[in-house]
Image 1 (cartoon, rainbow, N blue to C red):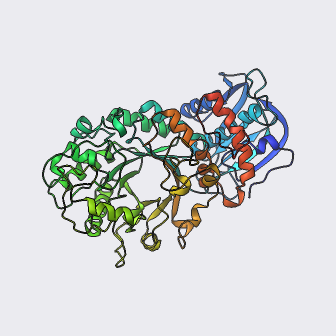
Image 2: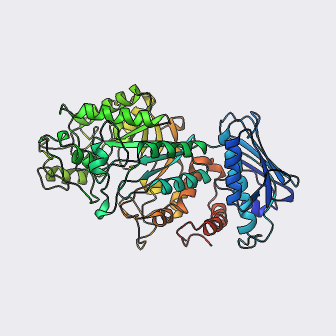
Image 3: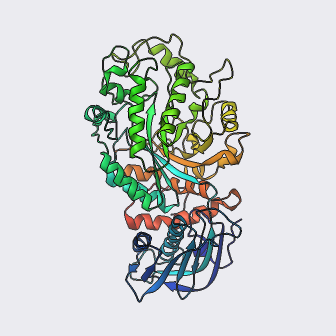
Amino acid sequence: MTTVSSGAAVVADAVIPVPVELVAGEGVLDLRSVTVHAPDAVTERLAGELLTSAGASVVADGATAVTLTVDPAAGPEGSRNSERYTLTVTAEGVSVAAPERSGLLHGVRTLRQLANAGRFGADGDGGATDVPLEVRAVVVRDEPRFGWRGLSFDVVRHWFGPADLRAVVDLVGSYKMNRLHLHLSDDQGWRLEIPSRPALTEKSSQGAVSGATGGFLTADEYRELQEYAAEREIVIVPEIDVPGHVNAATHAYGELTPSGEATDAYDGIEVGFSKLHFDLPTTEPFLRDVFTDVARMTLGPWVHFGGDEVLVMQPEEFGRFVVLCQEIIAGAGKVPVAWQEAAGSAHGDQAAVAALAGAEAGSGPGSGSGSDADDDAPAGHAGTPGGEAPVLVEPGTVLQYWDTRPDPAPFLRAAQAGARFVMSPADRAYLDMKYTPEHPLGQQWAAFVELHDSYDWDPAALIEGLPESAIEGVSAAVWTETLLNRDHLFSMLLPRLAAVAEAAWSQPGAKDWESFRRRIAVEAGAWRRDGASYHPTPQIDW
């Protein structure tokens, strides 16, 4: 339960996600000029950047002290969470204590929000820069509910380059999220250099929806992005989506099709029509090359192999891909991640499965010369009705739950086998869904997702019978079929990403919609100052 002392209106309306404990004190501290003391140069630099972005001037010495200290005793009483922290603001200075750098940065991010509230909150001066940058005295003790708190970001349908990706890293970090999952391959394009398979970017990197300009990350750019994120305690999780969503791969390598001919480039937005073929002798070497290269280039512990929306493949063949991809990724020293279908669940839209089954003979999107009609009656994914599917996932494999329609039984069996879950329900956390029917951007196949929808849900209540101990965390997602640039992207992320961040960080009993409404209105002052696009939903009194 969050503790907030009386008379702390601006303080209480400042912090997102809502912390475990916040106790206001007496007095104020002026942060216009600060000197940062930290355990190492990198942490000192990052803390200085965060405070500079709030309007503080960081000087070498002689200013208000902001002292960061490694302290195993920090955080809520009795906590053993590695990301816990304690922030203490008095009239004399600021201290942030945490057992690890992640907690130290969380504490500074909270301080940054408190500083923003001094200018943009009820008692502030509308963001004027010539007024004191004041923070009221406060003690915050905090820790996250879940360890995985992230955003899944599609950079295939429309390409977002290194500068945009760094901006998204910073945005994710500002709400204490710590994973950025990049969807790097799909039917329209391939976005990561694969040294062993150069044709993937030579032939398939420039495609995007409706003929837009494509692009890709070189191996060096990918490493630099990961290093940028890792400094900020954010892990990049790469996704190479197989055995469906593969038209970019079959366009680059015709030998991945039964005919041996490359498929045509595709710039539409249909899904489910493309696939690899397990029994082709070229398929397994391709997967081994790609995932081994990706694992070698990836600094973090996870590699995502997709597995969603393979709507023209029989369950048995799909299961063989799930087993093989886990074996390759684990053999390369990484933890496999996949979409929920890898658990053996049916696709939630069986009408789409049936429609594509009828189209597979050659009339479906992207069918080209690489399509075949081997499967007379495609059944969607493993686990479609007709019998209990075997458990395909290994202990420790992470499953990303997005489609709330299928029978939960396969997920419960997977959890019993040791699978972990990241919750990304499309009707709450897919931030490319339109806010309202009239909204000019986004799609609506899952739902219209307003800010309250992204806020009002409990990750532990999505799958009936799934123990909270099986939940690794929460991820928002944004798919970019209709998003052409950073302004489009941020207007869909903000304010909803902050709502999902609170679902991931805060305990259910601490959440309060009316409190969040006040806090997000204060936070929007920082977005306006920084020139970040956001959607001014009428659900908030801006």
